[in-house]
Length: 56
Image (cartoon, rainbow, N blue to C red; front, side, top):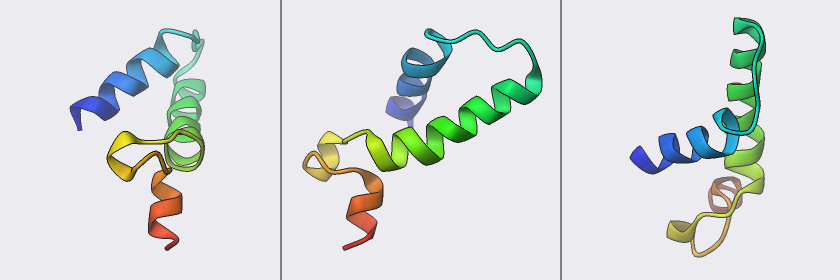
């Protein structure tokens, strides 16, 4: 879980400025469901995305 929060902080919060709570929530949801689960590879999954692992 700590690794997830570190990724969220460095790949989202440090790169973007959100000017409303709604945009912040949308950015977090997009990060989780698109980038973190479908695009970003994970070393614990042998370089595969979580989506690819669960699709097996």
